[in-house]
Length: 281
View 1 (cartoon, rainbow, N blue to C red):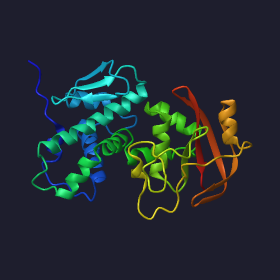
View 2: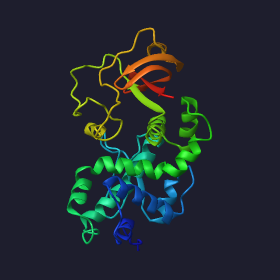
View 3: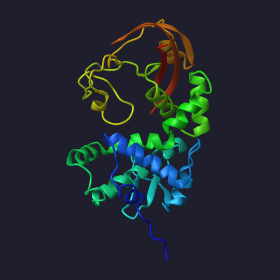
View 4: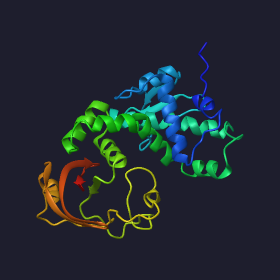
């Protein structure tokens, strides 16, 4: 007879959590999973967490665009066609979905306020991504690991290979943990200025909804429609398909000056794009 699987979030939510925001609750749950499974060293081994909590993980050909899903009896299905780095993030995302199963069952009804519950439900997918990032790259461990070498695209690529995650996920995490030092920009050729982005300032977002990029009192951001000179190293990375690094005159909202910029070309559905890491200090 198959062993019964108990939702670990039920135990996490059993006692009132001293949280100020939905993000705090999700981060706390990620740390709870790591602590319970004894998995607190980079790279995080999600397979160990799956085994500890008895979550079967299956690889299947899922409909196009579907990364993964989790059933009511806590069986996780991942798209077999995805790259392993994508599957890693999807698996972490599905672990976070378990928290929302417990909330739906009323596990926190005795102590959770209605505004907090509503905020969690309204932003579920974004919060699951945030929790997945914390599960795979816990801030205390990640900061310590990243600090072993000066930040560069090459160092980010080494971290990505070591953690078995995508370069984009690593760079985003680096920028999140110390946004005063770096800016990450994804460039596309002939980006249409008429493209609708549901952000008051037109700020794009790598993960989650676009309006997540509108924090209060934001003074610096990357404009949605920003061109670069044909003489720039950014454009050369696009044309030649090679990584470049050079000092560039940058004029963005709240970010203006001469900065060192590393650019890396990559392909998305057959279209070449460029990822740039702008060193602000």
